[in-house]
Image (cartoon, rainbow, N blue to C red; front, side, top):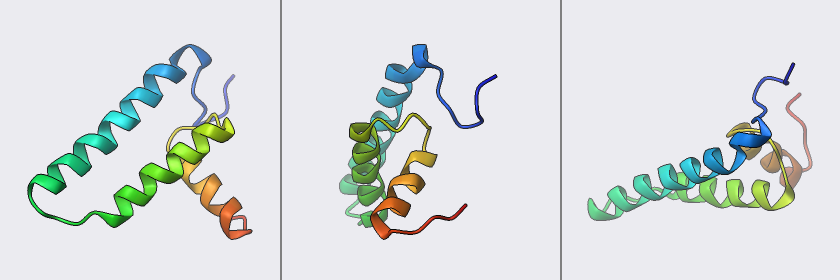
Length: 75
């Protein structure tokens, strides 16, 4: 059984593409409306760091990387 929040290996590329697409759509729409979205832009960057580090969770990867960068653990 997989750990909750873990992406099955066969779905990793699809899941990753969907998250990038979601971030891009949000930020594009905000740009069109001249609405600043600094937290969303930061979350997109942290998600990219998580992916580069090989973190295999879903958006919880953002929390894991943020904890690491801050030198703390929420668990």
